[in-house]
Amino acid sequence: MEGAAPMKLIPFLFLFSFVSGENIPFDVGEILNYDASFSNIKAARGSLKVLDKETINGVKTYHVQFTAYTKGIIDYLFPIDDVIDLWLTEDSLIPVRVKTDIHEGKYHKKRNLDLYHDLGYAIVGNDTIPMKSGTHSPYSLFYFFRNQDVSIIDGETLKTIQGKTITPLKVNVEENIQISVPAGDFLCSKVTPERTDKKQFKNKASMFILFSNDDNRYPVKIWLKLKFGALVLELDEIIN
Image (cartoon, rainbow, N blue to C red):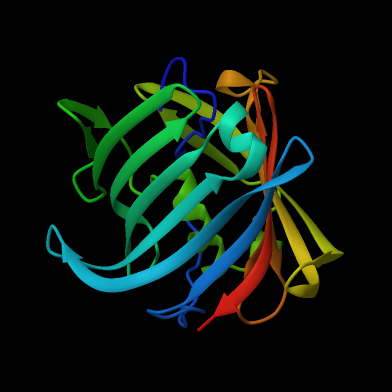
């Protein structure tokens, strides 16, 4: 996701350790469907799916998938059709493989990423990128934070990796936010990663996620600021 891509998020490289929960709050077969709006126009859909358990590079993982696509008039003006497959470790939900298939406007990009946390590097295409254990895809955060007590990570410092560029971020957490989405009313915690150097994200993108405060810790609302507007996903349906 580089260069001219209009919708680009930055993978997260955590420099601190979280205490992972012992009970993963989801299982194979869970589907979260979202109503989505682009620049305040309800003309998109999204989903998060837990597809299977698979072994990747000798590591037991959950295979999860994020999809987002536009419909109606927005699909003609600025079509989005993204599919991101991730394989997350069963115990700590960090990614060991990410496959992205991005279609946003006139931008099309496929990319494969393998992360070797124990060896300290990632392979992106033909490039080897040094990294520390705990590196994330931005999409894996939808699941990773579900296995955390987000109340204890407010103010923690982390870093992101985009290509070969490392970017400092700080996690900001706001608690006890009551919101209403198509799936119902939820009391949530809002998690926002912000650059500590005060510069904007690449392509002026930023994001936050609201997680439900119940045992499921659903990503109830996802907000992404794009170069030409904002994409907002609100939880519409829960299938277990």
